[in-house]
Amino acid sequence: MSRAAPTLMRRIQGMMFKLPLMITCEEFEAFILSYLEGELSGREKFVFELHMLLCRECREYLAAYRASLELAKESGKSTDEPLPPVPDDLVEAVLAARKR
Image 1 (cartoon, rainbow, N blue to C red):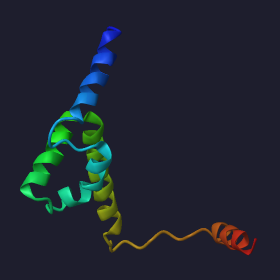
Image 2: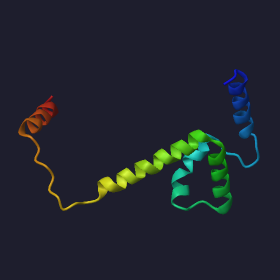
Image 3: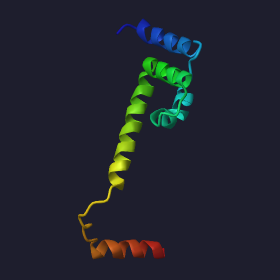
Image 4: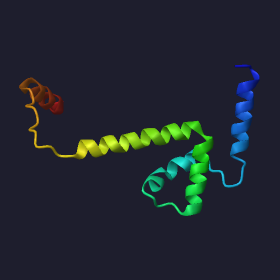
């Protein structure tokens, strides 16, 4: 990659946020949950997806956010399997730490 390539990318990213209908990464982050829950208007959804199309970091952030939500849902599911017993020495260590 030439030295000019990073400079060009910075210029493109700088110009990206001057485009009409463009939001910042912080604004993108603020709308993620509304986007995932289908609560954005058509215009808001368009602007959100336009930012995502142009910003690799926000695409990656959204993918990680979705994965986190899925893990949270999975961890909240109840199972019929009993929990493993807690070792006595662990219980004693927790209780001792709480006394301090």
